[in-house]
Length: 180
Image: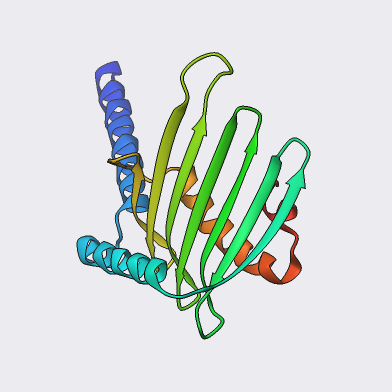
């Protein structure tokens, strides 16, 4: 085989691998089941509004873990059927703090709104917002501030943490769930 043919084969393999990686990354952020993303997000937004305007039962808990969180709080919001529909987890460490709101519909995670505030002791404070829209445990959209971006580990983390916090409601082992 000549050097020219080998170079073409190698180039074709590299292009093919790049295409496969691109396709794989798109599949992680775009539903493959033919879901109308816009309609699904509108349903999530309507449920978010319903949850935040409903009369809910609130149960709050505090936790701390050295090197992980200072002044940690977890609040559970239950509807009249005693189903958890919202969990708010917040805390701080050093010069930073966070607040994460997890929303559920029929026991399934549907949305996370997260704010991160922090900065150096001398200098401006920064605020970052993340939004994760989920349907059937699949990320539909991930937003960093107001920008739609490919789903990151943060989006997968929101999904994982949401269900761990649901379980922690009975165990009350919040630091174990959140500081791993």
